[in-house]
Image (cartoon, rainbow, N blue to C red; front, side, top):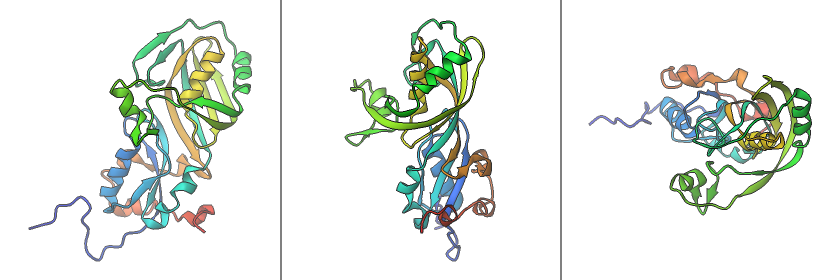
Length: 249
């Protein structure tokens, strides 16, 4: 009987490993992308360098085969850059556009100078609340699973470092766009809510895109929307060796 396993491959086929930079489309979880890549590359040995929320797009680094997956902790620690859009006046339970509205507040008169002053107070070492709807685990279970079940959780916090807020744009009423350069462990949803509250209102992210992870840029990534249908050889051509980035030595 034929073997119809998703991971079957010709006996002599090589399994090249390394880094696969993927531009994750909106609506997919990071684990969705890993599963698609496993089928496309005929291997079970793939991890990633840090999750992106389903609403978010942008750079996801897949670690293919043991030469790369053994370096996962090093990649998880790399700093990251994001481009985000913050909608003021409305808060959701997920702190982004995928959630249900839980609170509304009026937006006071603002200008770019006031917004920049607020971001200065949220630069450097920052104690942020971990979103209740996140992949953070508590006693082996992800917080978003517990939140969906209605489990009441105590607020949990971590300390991160915000290196800079750049290219801040304000539409004059209720929308702020910004680029955030930050340490690993940063929840941009949390920083967006903190910024909104510092401005005397509330808010949630309506767009989030990861631009860089350490020295790696989304500009050099494989289009994640094509991952299901692209020939294996085309995907393999995008694989990079970790040593190129000074990692894996």
